[in-house]
Image (cartoon, rainbow, N blue to C red; front, side, top):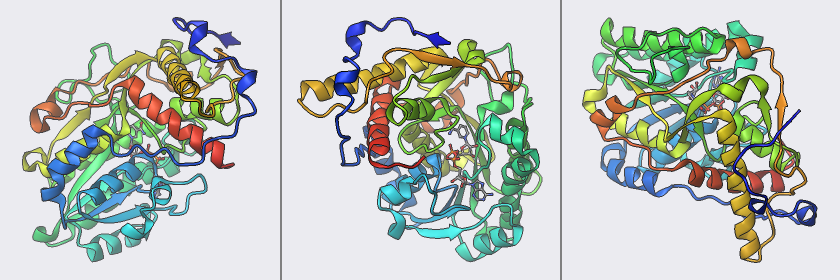
Amino acid sequence: MNFAPPALSSSDLLSPMTKAAAPAPHALPDSWPSPGLAATIAECRPFYHGKRVLVTGAFGFVGGHLARALHACGAQVGALDREVNPGAGSQIELAGLRDDVEIFPVDITDMNAVCHTVREGRFDFIFHLAAGATTIESAMGDPYATIMANTMGFVNFAECARRLPREERPVLLLSSTDKVYGESEALPYDEEKSALRGVGVYDAAKLAADIFAGMYHQALGLETIVLRMCNLFGPYDFNTDYRLIPKAMRNIFRDHDAPELYFSSLQHFRDYLYVEDAARAFLLLGREQKCRGHVFNLPGAHYASTPDVLREVIQAVAALQQRAHDEGNEPLAKWDWNRHIRLIDSSLSAMTISKQHLCGEKIKAATNFEPTMELQEGLQKTAAFYAWYFGNRRCA
Ligand SMILES: NC(=O)c1ccc[n+]([C@@H]2O[C@H](COP(=O)([O-])OP(=O)(O)OC[C@H]3O[C@@H](n4cnc5c(N)ncnc54)[C@H](O)[C@@H]3O)[C@@H](O)[C@H]2O)c1
């Protein structure tokens, strides 16, 4: 089934097959940091400089951006992950950060290994981003492993930190998700007023960790901060099998095909935020003493329906094509998919929340955080990265 998105004129796209034989560009188009992140790094550098910080999930999408930002702040960065040589790649590898961080190849479900790392690391901050099964499909496929990684993985860090002498305990930040709120008539979700009803496997496992973060603070005195994040996008997300934007990039740049959209997601609405803005939020929250013990939403720069976001993706790729054409450079995409979107069915639609929308007033009041990157500009940076990635690497 084909779905042609509205509001794109045919002149938005260059003719398909004339571009097909062009070679891909070779230099990694690394625009990191964006001006917004650069300003936040400059602002936070005096605070983080020399501090010992651990980023879990550092070889993943968000963790890679955060580890790089903390390194740019002058922190001594520990990069923990179960997979420290991921086949699809990582920002730490591609951006040449491997020698700048201390690498901890640790499985967060291994309590002994986590306690050893926390005790010996003497960290000032632990940014806990490691999580398994970050898509509905993979979480449904292995609920037990999802709960072990996404709930108990956090509890292991909290418990190991709690066992340290009080003055040696790190501040522990948890990357939570807007999915903890579940389906709600009252939008946007509010940290204090909205009910918590994570229903899916991933959602419930993250919600349990989110609640335990509050418990470890209120009952046991650990300094925790929870950040409930919306949908993030940007370069270096190698979850190209399931997530909307990286999957569309794979469809376009690797498969030379139309992007796919689940039929059920035609009516879905989500917040979207450029990943470097998420890294900014973590830096700002960690710095503010008054944020400790609190839960914050991380709002998007853009609230939109899923088909509209795919239309924006196509516009971003078209803009890059046009720019390459105007500058006499090689085109980036091999356009033989034209302007179609493929609609596919999913048996998991019943587990999917129809509308997710976060109120960002609390984090703004506490840290002055506001998104700095517009959706279309962020998508163009993202598209440039994936054009390079799929043009120069055969994996993923
Ligand atoms: N990307 C988003 O849009 C988004 C939105 C809301 C919340 N989050 C949360 O942000 C965090 C980071 O997400 P991401 O998009 O970077 O995901 P990702 O899948 O790119 O990265 C997760 C990393 O965690 C590691 N990991 C998984 N299980 C592990 C284990 N048992 N031990 C050690 N490491 C393990 C993986 O190897 C991977 O490198 C997650 O906690 C996720 O729940 C992400």
